[in-house]
Structures are given as C-alpha cells and as structure tokens.
Image (cartoon, rainbow over all chains, first blue to last red; front, side):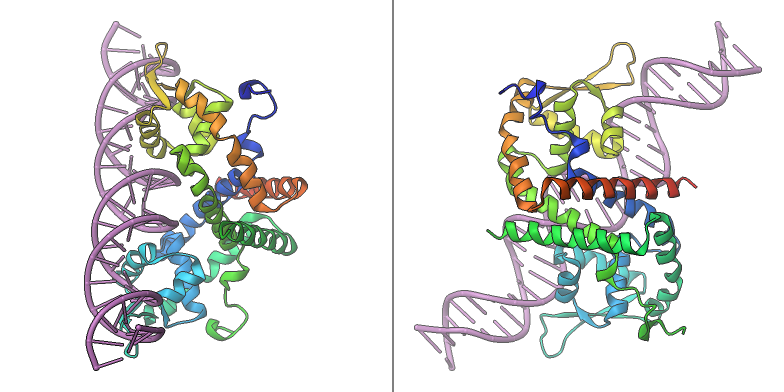
Length: 152
Length: 152
DNA sequence: TGTAATTGAATTGCGCACAATATAATTATG
DNA sequence: CATAATTATATTGTGCGCAATTCAATTACA
C-alpha cells in the first residue's frame, strides 16, 4: 500500500476542506470587487473601514488585532486610505509609538454609500440568515482550533 | 434612522460571513506553513502539486481551471516549481500554444514526504470527518452561488 | 538612574491574486 | 487562401499577506 498514485491514500483536491475554503474566500472577494470599485476600495480596505466605522480612532495595533493583520500589511494599506482622503494618521501624544487612525468626514460619509454593498452580497450568497450564522460560527470555531493547535 | 453610527444598521465585522471566511482561510495557510516549509512549498504550490499528483501532464489551462487561477498567477508559480526541480514545462507538439506541466522524479517522490501533512492538518482542525464534509459542501455551494450571481 | 528589554510602527523582500496587455499559434471565415 | 477572430500563455503593474529587520519610544530592572 505504498504506491500513492494508485490507491485511496491519494489526496484529492475536491475533498479538501482547505481548498473549499480557499475557493470560497476568493469567490467572496471577487463578488465584492465590482461593488467596492465605485467606492474606490479594495476588499481588505473595506474591512478596515468597517472596523473604523464601528470604532473610530483606533491605533494600528488594535486594527491589526481586530483584522488579524500585521503592520507589514496595514501600514501601506492605511497610507493608501490616507491618500484617498478617508483617514488621518497621527501619533498619539501620550505614547508616541502609536499611530491613531481616524476617519475624515469623507471617510465617515462613505458608510452611507457602502450600505448597499451588504445587501447585495447577502443576496448573492443565496443563504438564509440562519445558514449564514451557522456557517460563520463553524468557520470561527475552525479558525480557533487551527490557531490553538499552532500554539503547541 | 439614517444615523448609521448609532443604530442597528451598523455593519459589524464579527457577524460578517465573509470576514469569518477570510480569517479561517488565512488561519489554514498559516497552519500549513510550518508543515510545508520542510518540503520547500508554499500553500498554493502545494495545491498545484496535489493537482499534478492526481493527474500528471496537465496544460497550464487545465491547472488554472482546477485551481481557479489564471496564467498571471500560475506562470510565475510554475516557473518556481521548475526552478525547484519538481516539474518540467514543455510546449505541446500538436498545439504549440499549450505548455504541458509534468512532474519530475523529484516531484513525484515529494508526494511521500507530503503524506504527513494531511494527517497533521486534519488533527489541527479538530473536526470529525462528518463535520469536515458538511462544511466543505456548504462552502462549495456558497462559492457556486457567488460565482453564479456574478454572471448576471 | 542608567541600561536592558519590550513595544508599536514602518520598511524590505518574496510570493500570491488579478486586471490589463502582449504575443504567438490555431481556427474560423469571407 | 488570406485575413480576422480566438485561444494559450506570458508579462506588467498594483495590492495584499507575512516573515524579518529596523528604529524610536516606553517600560522594566539591576
């Protein structure tokens, strides 16, 4: 049973959970693309904006923890959002290491333009609210498991 | 009810399915990283290798369809696999536009080294076989829905 | 208090992911 | 048969995602 090319030990792409996840994740960002393009946002930028709409004035560190991204990803992304006039980046006075990200008026106003994106995506998934909730919770659990097993 | 900053219309990152997917997908590739590093493969390269272990001698186009990737992603990736001595890239005689990707002996042998990766990841997810199957099928359906709604 | 350790952000380098474009080979068509 | 349309792959440019490094600010501690 050592000839992998001719028996059931063969790994099949189509039955791998990670591959399904990989494909669904890409499908999502492709679905978002035409909706976000009019707003001038990429998908990761949109996630950052949502985090800021939830809680304005976060330091880069906090955004990184909320989105699970490091400064190597966030620093240039935030500079692009600043270039676009959506956020400001200012050093905190009480701790000059921190950079506080704050929405501009333009950034705050963009939330209204983005309202339609959510409903359009919800419709595109074709899922009921309960299905979405179940799937989301399963994925959250899966992520937790993967992260925890990595810490051992 | 138009003040989005103070009511329930507010989009919340933690309740978004796409964000859960985004996080779980990244968690997976982080979990794979230390397992694939000894093999000298990145996660997308590993997926390409699996596709080739399933079916050797595929043209770039077929690999792209199997993995849902275009030549802009695959061409440089395949060159790196060639550099690593895992595959060969040769023009098809009957249609010189096609480039056929074939495993080298080294590429075929790598399948044995990769056998442990699957079991390690399966353990890391902490999911039962049934849970994996359910989740995978839900994600496949979701992807189909997103792709189809994009074609309209 | 002075030095060491830690922390927050930015930068560099590499590898996807993907749109847009280019090029060459093949096929279709007038 | 010549030319137009299509097809397969490669290239270029932009933006993540992440490891590794750097730097300055802060905190710990000898």
